[in-house]
Image (cartoon, rainbow, N blue to C red; front, side, top):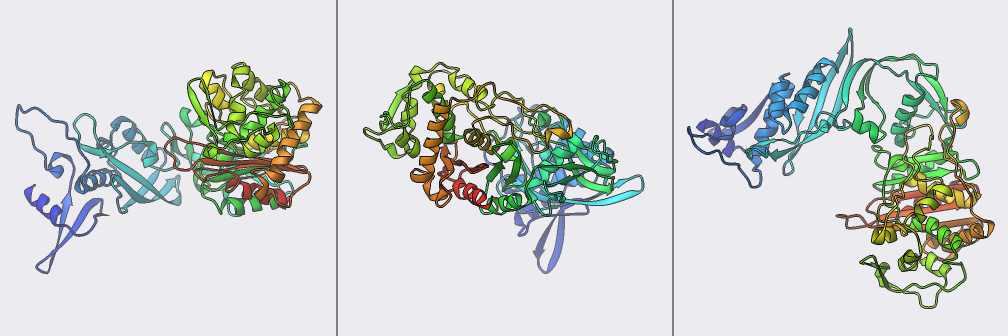
Length: 554
């Protein structure tokens, strides 16, 4: 044991997994030697005398502790010893079940794990394996990562267990299964009849998964043999679809036609590629057809399933409420002080600006927070919730667009939280799909539930709103958005797109984030779009150019 410790402390290079063991090369006196590290207390150099009180080790992890814990886990996993690998994690029961499933249910063999360069307690690694099922094989390769932490009971370094360690697309509770897929594949088509693929449109991975899950069994296809992630309860609650990781034999796909426009989808892909963590959706206001949906990350579908505070874009809905209740009017004077206190919170405008003797139109165009917060005391706690539900069709959890989506949330709140919700903070949560729908409702005058697959395909019933805005309220709301696009915070992005247009910018503060999320929602003619750039800054500068480019393309 002592010899192992001395060699480890003299090592000059990072370990690699060789034949399932961690090997460290030490060069001395012209001779190469390999020190092999096993598991348990011996590898960590810890002993305890009989009857001694066991102490919980604390403090930052050393590089050796990270290397040893990661090596012990990866070596046991690679060599097909799931119980031993699981014992090196923070949750041996969950880890053991999934690692056993990896071999027995997923039928993965010839596993090779290659460790990358650690960063603190995080250790990246690559995986190569073979999926073998009933005489048919397919290769599998991907990258993952683990994090070493101290175990709470004794402070020993262990792998912090989550299913994503095994594969980054796994959520806790998911399963890996190889076999005849329960859902036949589908060939998704755009509105012109051309096939939609992730090779042409990288953002559509989650959309295609969702289409297959919903329509695979009814579209006329036949299942093949695949390695798939079968979602558990937590992932299903988050509306994540099952995912194919490897295809051993092809099934016969059925056909599903969507409403996506090939030109707009291609442009949406190009635009989000320019901004990290961006997402955008384009709709046709007169029908609700989704013409494009794109995400920069190509992972989680923020555009359709995101749940983010929408910031000042929410003021479109709030303005409709204030105008209906005669608490605001486009050309009437409206207060916009530097700050306003409500419910014990002091609300500010950006850079504490104020508009003296200004109109409500001026406050909307410049996105004055206090102009809205100052009206909170005149509203009931459920007024904004009812407005969002009854007029804009939001926050009812009843949209059926053809793939999993989030329909927005505008919960009933009180005091300061209610006031914050008026400016798109508090408990309000939206995504680009929701905010594009808000702009579309203003443009068309009536809520049309967005959809990606025509309801005629499966005779499903689309959601509706229980009422529409009066002609006067609608005219004022359009004037607010037109003026903002022409002379307000959206003017730079929307330059040259008028006169039949309207827009609203937004910025949403997020705890622990240096820059706010930037939002932009707008319409032009029979197109409406909304986008978000997370941690990007002001919406007019970040999401604005993405949305404007798509409105111009359409």
